[in-house]
Image (tube, rainbow, N blue to C red; front, side, top):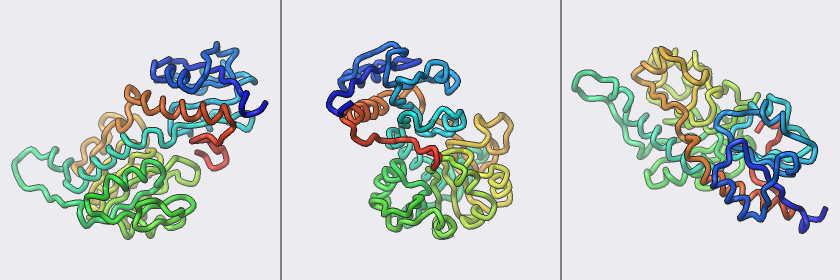
Length: 308
């Protein structure tokens, strides 16, 4: 089929937020029953791969997912070379980068320690100005965070798998230079995908490189960090602060030490809440459907080999 004649018969579901339905219409797509669709735009607050597996059929050429992280989709075995799978990587960059900035400021100002205080008194605090911020996984979120940090007078080090030059970063490193980034950083922000190569990439030795005056921010995936090692480092004062929007395990159980340590701050995976995702996701859906219709490369295509 030529690019100019590729049809867009689109099923949106199991949830059908109006923003996504409107995005399909703007892209020139036609709503279709799932059994007649050649494109699935997946949107669900609770359903996952098991539900999609029940309705997926051979005529589906594209599945657009609503999540940036795809590890559970890859684990399901559904993602293969028989069709295109596109994730929402980068679609939510603005909101997550803003949350990362808030957590960086919380780490610098020791807001968790101040919030845990039960008597009046000074809490040591620092300014971000003059600090070095290392960003591990400097994709869309990392690039947007670099823009937000620019007025604050920080030095930024960006790490990507390939070591490409990241716009706005003072230094760009590759995956083999993680230790170099940590040793040079006052604060490290994790925004990488969770893959076999990044699983527990931050352990005891890496936390010691950040040091007692350093801070760790995680807005990527909880599994990037060895949680037991993190708790030990925080308790021993080997790491100054940890501010986390994602944890391992997740949800973080009641009574877990990370809830009560005064140098830890946990927000329960709210940097990109589900109820605010449909507008930026709609922008991505419209763009990818337009690209798919004319045979152009899509945004956020999942690579099963690389794991994201």
